[in-house]
Image 1 (cartoon, helix red, strand yellow):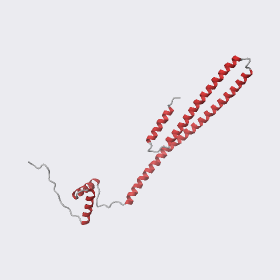
Image 2: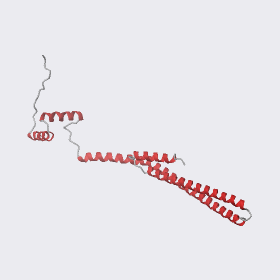
Image 3: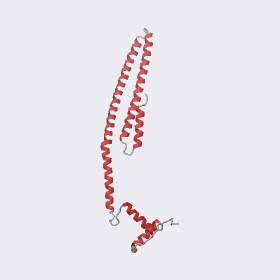
Image 4: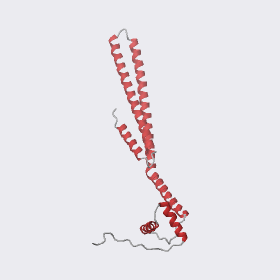
Amino acid sequence: MGNQHRKTIFTTIGIDNETNALVERICKRYSLKKGEIVKLAFLYLEKAHINPADAPESVKTELAKINKRQDDIIRFIRSYEEKELNPMIRTSHSIAVKFDASVKEQTGLITSEINTTRELQDNVLKKISETFNQHATVINNQAKQITDLSQAVNASSKKQERNNNKLLKLISLYSELATCGVMDGKRKENLKNEINDLINEKQ
C-alpha cells in the first residue's frame, strides 16, 4: 500500500542575529511560526512581483503619487463643472428669467382686467342707480351679470395665482437641481421626479 500523504521535506537557511530577531518579532505579532512567516513572505513577493533587492520608495514619493491622484480628481471635477454643471446653471437661470417675466406679464394682465372690471362695475352701478325706478327688470339682469362677471374674475385670479405659485415652485426646484453636486444622484433623481409631478399636475 503506497503512502497516501506526500512527506514534506524541510530545509534550513542561514540568517544573522538581527534578521532572526526581526523574524521573531513578526512571528510574535501575528502568532505565526518562523516557517510560516518565511513561506508567506516569499509567496507575497512572488505574487506582487516585488524585488526585495529594490529599495522601498520614500514617503515623499508616495505622497507625490497621492497628490497627483488628487490633482487628477480635481481636474476631472472642474472639467465636469465646466462641461455639465455650468451649462445647466445657465439654462436654469435663463428659465428662471423667462418665468419671472411671464409671471410679471400675467400679473399685469390680471391687474388690468381687474381695474377694467371695477370700472365697468362702477359705470353699471351708476347707470342702474340713475334708472332704478324706471327699469326694475333691467336692474335685476344687470345685477346678475355683475355677479357672474365678478365670480369669473375671481376664479381667473385664483387660477392665475395657482399657476404663479406653480411657476415659482418650478424655479426653486430647477435651481436646487442645478446646485446638486456630482455625488448627489439620489437627490437629483428625487428633484426630477418632483418637477415632473408638478408639471403633470392637473389644474
